[in-house]
Image (tube, rainbow, N blue to C red; front, side, top):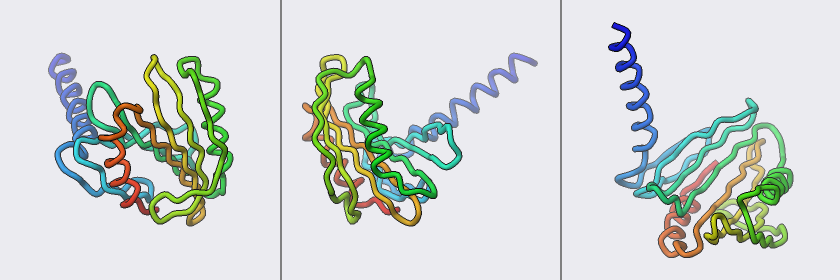
Length: 173
């Protein structure tokens, strides 16, 4: 009987994981999480991230596959304007990481992300000798801060940037 319960529990867990990972795989699909809606590109998946605070929610939209060559991390901070805090906090975390090398940051500037105006910090870095291009955006809309980080392996930009464009142009918050 115990074995049957273990198999049933395992089957339930596998089903839940499959539902999360299959959310956008085969076709473009409209998704809404934490008051943020967007179109998830074909071949990409959405994964919710754990949060240590009740007022912060995050999810990642990433290219499906073993070698993740592109992803978009979206963080929603409820009830406060924290654009610069978000950007500087992520910048500091990247600088303190022991696995990230050859960091080159550009200064913070005003920018657009789809229809939204906010702040942008761009940087390049190497992880395991693979060059990445990252863009960190932050916006304050409707009483909350939205932070968006686009991360792409430099050599894959030709296939990743069109997906970033689909996400960027469809995103609403």
